[in-house]
Length: 371
Image 1 (cartoon, one colour):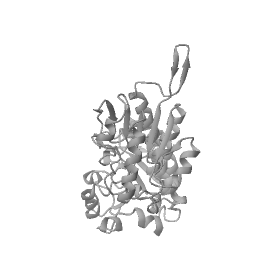
Image 2 (cartoon, helix red, strand yellow):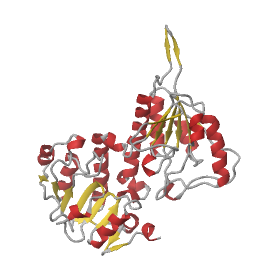
Image 3 (tube, helix red, strand yellow):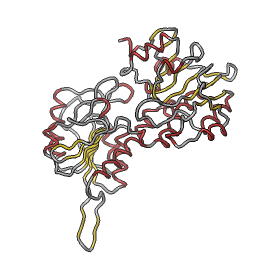
Image 4 (cartoon, helix red, strand yellow):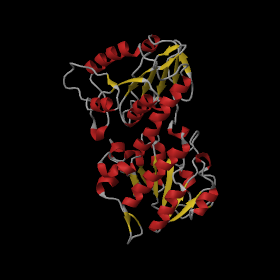
């Protein structure tokens, strides 16, 4: 069983899909590991570190590979030489890169989309969305604090008192919860909102103030697998009114709302931005999926009505060492959980295999791509 680790080629991608730690663990399972030269450079991992862990560092790492690991889906041309039926295990962006998925199928590869991992208890350690979103939520607050022209905590000095910054987090998934926790640690007054009523207690447990629409019956916002779903027009109108009154008082706003397979929902309009104080900062974590904020642009600082709007196309890649370490552990946890010692390879069960398998036997087989 040969596992190949690719050097990422996507613009701005600094992460790597394996670390010396996981290389050693794969070898302990009985696999051999080959790493393309320079694969870990951006994540501060030298080729010599991979070699010391037992990996073969070679430009032809993919040749004869049974499993190819990546952070983002590799170009099909980069897979030339991999064994027929080889697994491609990565974040494959199935909805945004459908042509690439079709190419994997045509080439006979079995593509496994790690972002389709079901959110069930036994798969938590395999969930790349959670591990990377956790870091993204932290980084969003740090970047917003850096762009904000004032201090976060309240300071009482001989020269006078500095008021604490007010931070509002919109969307309380993994990224939002980490954003709340980080803003609290920095000393801000934090409030948060979400369409899922179950998150109210989570917000309070972190010491933040929940901001929720009241008196709109039957709106829970809980979709399959713990993800949010789109809300009714009644709820959207009530939420917009609530946000408009609250956002005008905020110094920092972090937006995190995403709906799998769809464009990011619009949470903040230009008119709402105009009500904010000059010097305020908005960080749009959903900017790469169309953005929660009107006018936000990936990897650009946009100034509207005196408010700075920030958003990165790949926020976890701004923390390459930690992001790579967590991503690599997600992949190892996944493959090792299904490792069959007799066959010397992983064998997927039906529940997780059906959820993440995109292609098999020359065809696209995932129901989410066939609908």
